[in-house]
Length: 496
Image 1 (spheres, rainbow, N blue to C red):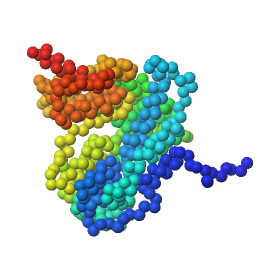
Image 2: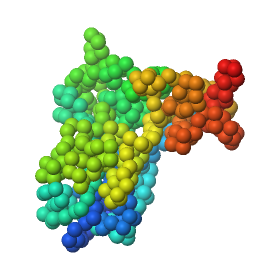
Image 3: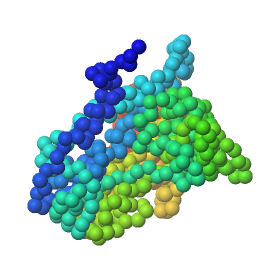
Image 4: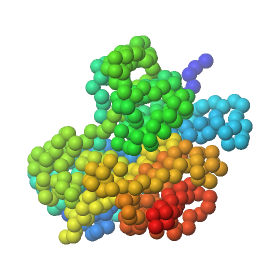
């Protein structure tokens, strides 16, 4: 039987989605425009920080050029928040179906995981959202879009593939890339990072995740719930080392409940290819072990993209942590600012967004805004989620601030009980003998949404006593915050 001619067959939906995404984010027939004599603002990089910086600059009336060497949209759209949260949602659905009896339902008799279909959904979502980052959307806003490699040639000139662009002000927003651990044999055996893990179409039967930061934790849980036999190796006593210990312990326990092989205080010291498999040698104190897996995912952090910009030609200082900036996000070149992952300690999309607003405002306005004045929450989207804003207790004590903490377990919240989502707590820290909120940590299924109420209170300088007067829709998991506020008011009564 002759082979089937598929040249005129319609592409599979995932192939069509990828084609749409690429055509939207870097049209193959794109031609760079003729540059203006001088731009008021040049933005290098089109991730969340760069895209917003270009939009903000144009909205302020500046003549703006946006330069991108790859795909518009940056990590968030292509390899970060959007694909990861799409995949996490599907993995959570499978976990809920397996535990249907916990919710008073019957577990499906023939539950089959279709990982390829889940990844197809990821690609469809990326393609759908790529329309908002197309060159046409920037051009319609009066922004000149240049594709190509950007290099500084002087303090006020950037070259894009040989074309010179002069500027009055510039914002560098080139982001960061996954940091690969220097483990002997890892590169030869091959490994996954956030840049290529979402291109998988087959589920690895056995997966090793190296690193217990947000990315490693989120994807370890997701792949385990799809059915991968997952091992996570973290070289510290708990995951998420910056978070409060009881929050990290809850996550560690949940991983064990999910069936993840949790290896804390464990370091991967060598990787060997063994046919189609990979042998990972681990060391924990004096105990040595070897785990055989089909794929390795690294999630140990990110490295700022600074090497190929020729920053020295513009007098811009940088180091391993990224571009050096002051509190106004101004670099050592007073006409160049930086925003996003290329200069920030906290590498989140919303932090990039916030820093872009600060950088552009300072670049085009006479008034100045400080990055340190912002209140920035963050969340790790595991199940349960771990969200935080403001000061930790240890930070407050280091500053000599006396702290009083009000904690409400989620199993005391009616909506958490009805939803059978009782794992976690809401913990709010206030300055002792006042209702001034210093910070909060929330561990719950919806912690990323719940933390925003505390963030608003911090920004608006609303005290915990005022939150006690806020009527919350019932039943709602945010009642945990109301209960903590009520506990504060009750403590005043006891004190008197």
